[in-house]
Length: 537
Image (cartoon, rainbow, N blue to C red):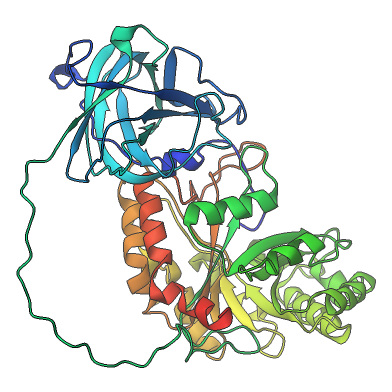
């Protein structure tokens, strides 16, 4: 998936809006409630946002729309104040009046921040959900429901709650601007569980341990190979008209950490890179990202480039890299080349034509001063291509290849395509025919570190816990693949810029609250931070 893909459909809330425990409206599950219970607190602010109108505010209307309608996504927001301190063991009964909509599942979350205003909240600036508090079904049509929320906390008595829908459909909920009997209310029930008093244990003098700095004993080689851990990077795809740069920084905000590697795509024989803006991202104070470029020629066959047709551009690019790139960066040449191979003699696109293209491009860049470019041979990596008679002819040679990469995705159907991390990086339907890409590269090119140049995990409603479980087990499984030294995630809503749905699915990390929480936990593990600690200490 090396072409740049962006936009419509899911954004941060579907994945960052955490879930809610609610009693729905299907048959006997729906609960008819009195208009307002004694002691209940009415929402002090509420609104909803629309993905296709990212700057429009809906704080003054009498409804809160939640769900998806055609190509847009609607998320709801509620704020309650003066509730008093709330412990995670307390129960909050959120009472809503649903005025219409379709049957489905509503989700709720405690939002990351209470710092939003009813009069200005919009899709572009809305806070994200950080804590799952449950899910439940709701019926079609008008109904009153109670959502029993647990796990929320507050020290100042203010709680912000996000509402979303799973798997499409729409719910229309009365806002605080509606009639008094329909307004959202919440009531806190303190936990009756007695506190656990720990036994008194006599103090023990701890052993004296000399202070250490994380990553102190780790190193990074001249070709950017970390001796400890694995680089974490991403290509954050634009959503709703974002720039590529804005999407990259949004991904970091959603994931909760700075990327080690930030991925850019370059096409044709005119662009000079790294650009000033990309260098500013690389050198941003306390960020220090490594740049990864994927360059592909335009209007020329591999054979034409190998024969020198792009030399004027490549020589200028090498000189530009020497003058402007003070730090090393990754450079992938025509990634995912396998499906462009045409073995017809004279096509200019045979496997050996690619081999010569890669060798020539690298040699011209290095001779022109572009020695800071760490080259990446980036395959698609699937069994279909690995079993082709010409597959091994693609490889340009160890002298011009620094890293070997593949672009695997977890999507489709089990057991081959929808699999866990280990199954994804070594995907095969028959190990006797194809050992899996990781095994192939480790066996045939044992001196080369490996990278996932792109990878992603689909949010498949058929398997609602799959993405969460994938991330929850990825860190432990990564340790089984010691040659994997860089993982560069592809964060996408699953659509091309023109709205075409991509086969790899919805890979954005915030496609669901539980998926986001698992992803954040995954990238906070030691194995995903040791490389950064050693390189950027």
